[in-house]
Image 1 (cartoon, rainbow, N blue to C red):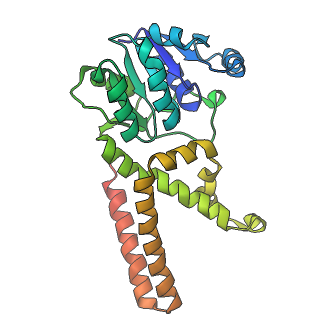
Image 2 (tube, one colour):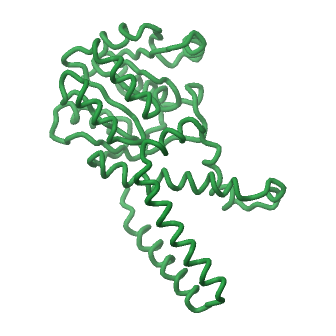
Amino acid sequence: MFKRVGIIGVGLMGGSFALAFKEKFPQSKTVGFARKESSFKRLKKIDILDEVSSDLKKVVKGSDLLVLALPVSLIVDYLELIAPFLGKETVVMDLGSTKREIHRVAKKLLPKRDNFVGCHPLCGSEKSGAEYAYKDLYKGTLCLITSASKNKNVKNIRMVWKAFGAKVRFLTPGMHDKILSYISHFPHILSFSLTKLVPSKFYQFSSLSFHDMTRVSASAARLWTEIFLSNQQNINKNISEFVEILGTFKNLIEEGKEKELFSFIKAINRKNAFEKHLDTR
């Protein structure tokens, strides 16, 4: 299906994609792009690719599948950089965290619109870098595809994710960004905010639940700055909605309204139990 896979952005996600692809499709060849000399040496040392190249044109021109495993703003930049070298049949896919802007630019720049497949595997770690890559990162996860499901190239990419052990769901780019703001982007803001709020001297008394809530606040600052800015309309809406909920808690506590506070929390308990029942992933 894909004899040569070029990967631009060989970090945790891109590196894990390379390892998973080689395991499931051992006849294929993986080639990683290293923009800096330090990256080139590091990728050669950890040896997770068949080939490492600092020549972008070489990586692009020889690949049947090109994977952009980069922050959103860099995906947009690289779509422009790779466009002149793309073959007519080369499939380009991204692993970006937001989708509307990426799809807009891909539609404008790529020679064949059907050759772009937007993907977002819902996994990762607060750790980053190719040295943390592992072949089972995508196993048992959910991958969202934001390109039309009837497209032949999309069907092939879906087969790749299924081979990795991931489940696949299809969403429009706009719906993807709205949903991800609720379930990923805004929760990261909460984690960052909670870590900011609590004095460091109190951490010695913290529980496991506190560590669970603040774990992702160790996530890369550059990556999350770009994600927040690329989905700002949805995130700002979520912040306003959350402030309103906090305001309800504040007023009920301030006014000592025990029955109303109990009922408010109880309604949230019921919603939590109902939504867990609905989780079919």
